[in-house]
Image (cartoon, rainbow, N blue to C red; front, side, top):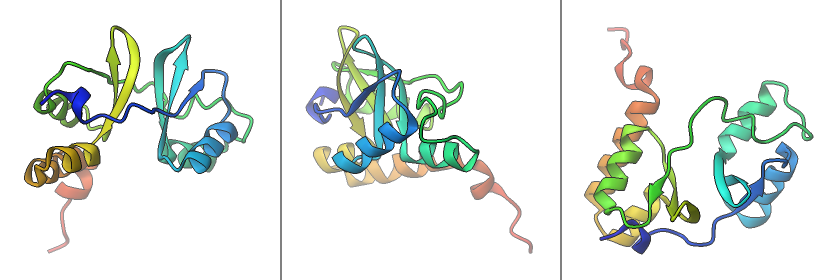
Length: 148
């Protein structure tokens, strides 16, 4: 199965000039947890609700550019023709839960761990991916000493 078969084609996007306030409003109004920041139609960054919350906690205001919260984290993207398993491996490798999908260099959609779980019907693969991404993103949570 190709990633294009499970992705969501309607991606919420904002220009690089968007502020944190504008992105937060988009998330609220469109009921999404992420917005793809685009530059001339091409994806530049992915801003999550957590990125917005952390930026505000660190002192960013509503008028701060939204392009900043993801820091120096590179944007990880997939290609529409990728197999679902290949996209899943890419997501686990980079510890991301959302993967913008490109077709010919243009944004074609986005796929999430939830999309893969629901649309492939492979609950075991989705559970394993979620656990792998969580371990990669939060290693100290999984591997800390438990005060024995």
